[in-house]
Length: 266
Ligand SMILES: NC(=O)C1=CN([C@@H]2O[C@H](COP(=O)(O)OP(=O)(O)OC[C@H]3O[C@@H](n4cnc5c(N)ncnc54)[C@H](OP(=O)(O)O)[C@@H]3O)[C@@H](O)[C@H]2O)C=CC1
Ligand SMILES: O=C(O)C1=N[C@H](C(=O)O)C[C@H](O)C1
Image (cartoon, rainbow, N blue to C red):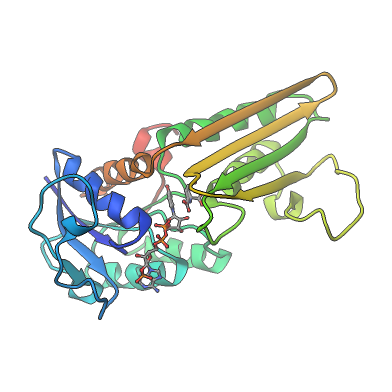
């Protein structure tokens, strides 16, 4: 039985993560953590989630109980950094799904992994992790003159763009091509009048309604076009993946792992 604490338990993903812990047979939700002084502290977790039975109440994040095996964080970069420090203080393995991290945040994550085991992934669905490998094959196999673009669509509340997953896909393509991602990434076509360059990965973003998460990598050349698409239709897909990662991470040595390690896809 893996005892799990969820940071940001009142968020869109936080609620579904609590649900995923309750549904899973061999995990136990032992702490649903919210910001210190949050109005929800003391109220029952079942107020916010649709499945599972628990007598658990929300607690402040600094009151993290000792009897926890793994923590999970899907919050925002500032919250993630605070939660990472708490995890280091308590020598607690942590699964992180927060996106919108800067290069500096990533460097801090790598440094933290010297002290505790961490799984970080910008997408915990199995499908996207398979797609990450498929785009590498496409990038290596298609003709040199192929045009590459990444499109993503998400719900109206999402704050970071392009999504972490879109960047993960673009970075995988760049790696397969032997390109430096930041030199070939094109985020905005409105500021310069310029045709598409050969060594370029263009990103486009849509924000609308309740779209859970859709990603397409386009590989287009003269006479053919390959489109590799993934559509998530439920947040439970990500949450189930994160709980799977938490169970896998328990008792692992310190280090920075990703969902490809968890799934044995490397
Ligand atoms: N890797 C993956 O597979 C996936 C990653 N994500 C990522 O997860 C993250 C959360 O998404 P979502 O649930 O939709 O977002 P929400 O806005 O619904 O939830 C954010 C949560 O983070 C908490 N939070 C924000 N800032 C802080 C802080 N400084 N200290 C403590 N808590 C904080 C919020 O608490 P409060 O309400 O008090 O502000 C809230 O509980 C995003 O980065 C998203 O991209 C989402 C889906 C899948
Ligand atoms: O914010 C979201 O909702 C999602 N965020 C992740 C991302 O930025 O890629 C993963 C997923 O697509 C949903």
